[in-house]
Picture: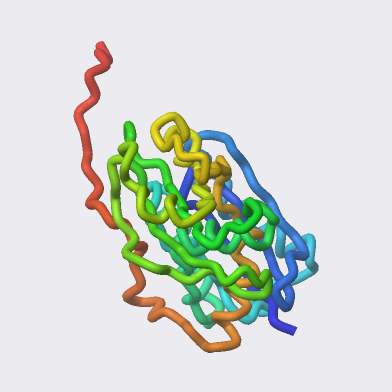
Length: 236
C-alpha cells in the first residue's frame, strides 16, 4: 500500500491530507487568511495521528509547486522538504494548474461535452495565472497540458479560438472575476480552490512512475518574482 502525505498551500486555502493507494483517508483544511505558516505543521501532525502513523510510515510527500501565493508556496515547500530530509522520504511536486484540471474531472465539475479546461489562479486585479488543458472525455484519464502556464490579464477575446470549438471550463480561485469579461455561451466557471485531497490521484501516479524531485534543490514554481511593497498605511 502506498501512503502519501499531500500538502496544498498555493492559494488562500491551506490543506493537508493523507492518501492510501490514491484514496484520501484523512484531511484537514482552513480558509483562515494568512494561516498557512501557523496551520500547516499542526495539520500534518493531526492527519498522521488520525491514521496512527509516523512520518517514517509514509512512502512519499507531495506538495503543490505553484504558481500561486509566494508565502503559501514557501510554507508548503519548506514543510515538505523538512519531512523528506528528516525521514528520508522522496519528494513529489505537482503544479497547481494540474491539480485544478484533475479536480475538474474527479469532482464532476465538467459541463457536458467539455474537452477544454483552463485553470485560473488569482493574481491581482484582472490578472490570473492560467494554462490550457485538453481532456479525452474518459474520467480515468487526467487532463493534458496543451500550452504554457503563464500570467495573463484577462480580456474579452483572450480565449476566442477555444471557446469557438465548444464548452470550456474555467476553474480556480480566479475564475469568478473573469465571468463578467468572458461572456461566451460556451464559457463555464467553477470558483474553487485547489486542495490537498484533489492531489491524490496525481500523486499516486507520480509515485508509481518514480517522478521525484531533488529535495535539496527543489524550489516552487513562482512564475513571477516576489515584489515587496511599501505600505501606505500610517503606523504612527
